[in-house]
Amino acid sequence: MRSKPVILFVLFVFCMSLAGCFTSDNPADETAVTPTTTDRALELDSNSQISISTTQVSVKTDNSDKATITATVIDTDNSVVEGAVVS
Image (cartoon, rainbow, N blue to C red; front, side, top):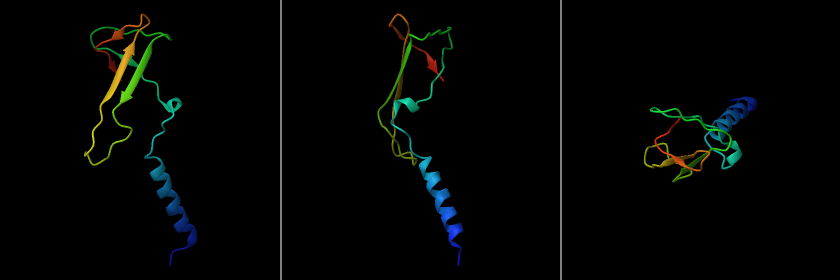
C-alpha cells in the first residue's frame, strides 16, 4: 500500500502539469513580439501597433483542429505594413 504523502505528491504533480496546458484570456498576459522583415528594415516606435487575432481560442493536440493566426502591423502613419515577418 502506498503512503498518503506519496499519493498526494503524485496528484499535485499531475494537477500542476494539467494547469500548464491552459492559457489565459487576459490580454495583459500576452508576450511582446519583435517584428522583422526580410527585404527591408522595419522600425517601429511606441506609437506603432501590432494586432494579433485567431479564429479559435484553443485547438486539439491530435491535429483534428486548425486555427488561423493573423498579425497586423500598423506603423506610426497608421498604414498597414505588408510582408512583415513577426518572430
